[in-house]
Every structure is written in C-alpha cells, then in structure tokens.
Length: 342
Image 1: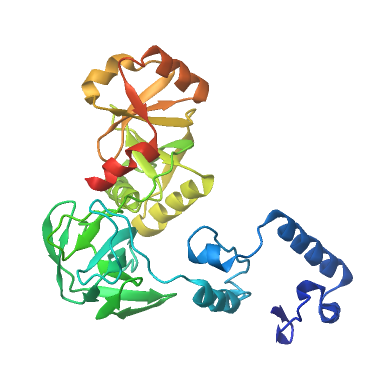
Image 2: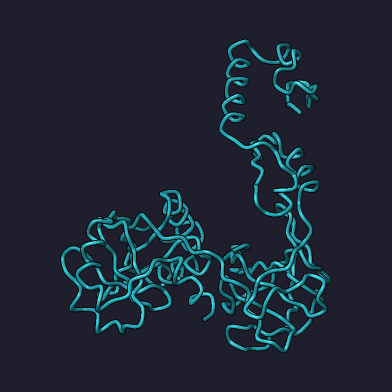
C-alpha cells in the first residue's frame, strides 16, 4: 500500500513498479523510490515465514508514525507473522507457556510515565500461566512476596487496567523501585529464574555532572532511576565522579533530555578517552588499586562491581597480557548472567 494525496493506494503485484505510481510521484522521486527498493532487495534476505516463526529471521518494516505512513500495514503484518508463545529457557529447564504456574520476566522499566505523579512501570512479559490482578507472586532474585494489585496495559498513549492476561501478553506493573531488568516473578514454589537479557558492552563514555550544584540531589536521583531502566550504564570512580557508558551517541542525548525534562537538571557532559570496559572477577575493589595507571581507570558499576576502562583494544590487550595470571577480565555479556541472577 502507498499513501498519496488522495489517501491509501493499493499497488498491484509489481509493488513500486506499478505504473499507477507515475500519477502520484514526480519522475525523479519515483526513480529514487524504485532504486532504493532495489537496494533493499539486494541487501536483504528473502521473506521466510517459517524462519520468522522460529525466531531465526526478523522482518524489517519502514514507515513513519509521525504521518501515519506504514503503521497500519506494519500492525497487520505483525498480527499475521507473530509466532505463538514458546517455551522459555530457565535455570530449571524450559518453562512451557501452557504450564499452570504463573511466571514472567521484567524486560523494561520506565520511570515517569506520568511526570506529574513520578510513577514508574515495570513491563513484564508473561511466560506461563494466567495473570490475575491482585495475585501474589515471588520475586526470585530476593525471595520477596509481592501482591500485583496495580496492573496496566498500554497502547500508544492509552492506558487501561488489566485484570487478566495470558502467556505472550505484556503487562505493566507499578514499581516503587522493587524490580530490576531481568527479574523473574512466579507463583511456583521452585526458584525459577529465566535466562538473563543481554547487556551490550559500551563503546562510548562521558563524564557527567550537574551545572548547578544545588540540583545535586535531583541529579543523583535521576541518574539512579534512569540507570535502572537499562538504557545507559553508570560508573563511579574513587572520587565519586559519574561516568556514563553507551553503545551510541543518541543514548547520551536522550539521557540529557530526560534529566532536564523530568528532573529539572541541566548537566555538563564531557567526552573521555575510553572505549573499552572490562569487569574484574573474584577481586575486591581495594585489591585492584595497584593495577590502576595512566592508561586505564578503575570504576564501579551500579552493582558496585569493579570495572577497568581502557582507551582502546590495544591498551586492554597489553594490560591483559601483563596481568593474565593475576586478574580475570570479562566483558558485559559474560557478566550478564551474574547480574541478572542477583
């Protein structure tokens, strides 16, 4: 389908090569459209519904929500292609979606969904059983019993209370700071923990501080809450300076915007010459200080785990060779399971 001045236009089996498009686009724009579609056809894979159903291939859609181009088509294809819920790996084996015991995991946390109320929502993907509002569950990480009395489902800007949900559904539950990304909740007497979500190694780093020192309290609260969402990684050095780690520059820009918009804090962001982060296993922080020099920096993550930041891979490799018998260094993916289990 194609959106023109007269509304939605259905193309024939030739797609963008349908001659009718010449009535809606200039010759230059039509040529560009067809050339770019040819590029996509050459760069992508053939559609394979079976591979999509088994999670081996992910379809990519192009459109824009701002002008509602392609959104309806995307939703229709999403409904057609989405696979049914499958068993999810856990520490006690695969959990079948048809199991009677309720289980789910937290895959996203969003602070200030309603800035006027400073609310925080933990999004839970249900893996098995039936969710009933008001039910009691156990948070595996802490063993704590929790009553799920405030639950919602969201679609765009609409939010409504959900009383019942099933495997494959996503619900939002009120969070006062109890949950972490990767947490498992369940009614089972077994200590079920679903496999952890991946944490990608940061490649960009910034030192960040509030411009107005009187806003320090709001600044630290914002940093803590936004770090818990998992979109950006936060580190502190021995002087309690805060460093952010991210995969892309956009994450810094979003962080800066949200601190200003939601917490009223203007910040100063300074680039630092680090690009590699490695966690240290089985060593206390104080025992690692002798290993710190001008080519690295020792910091802690938000779980207070020791981390070395290096300028580049060459610096890291030299450090690793020098101390390979004394230190075990791992990246974010390797420590992910440990983080998710705590």
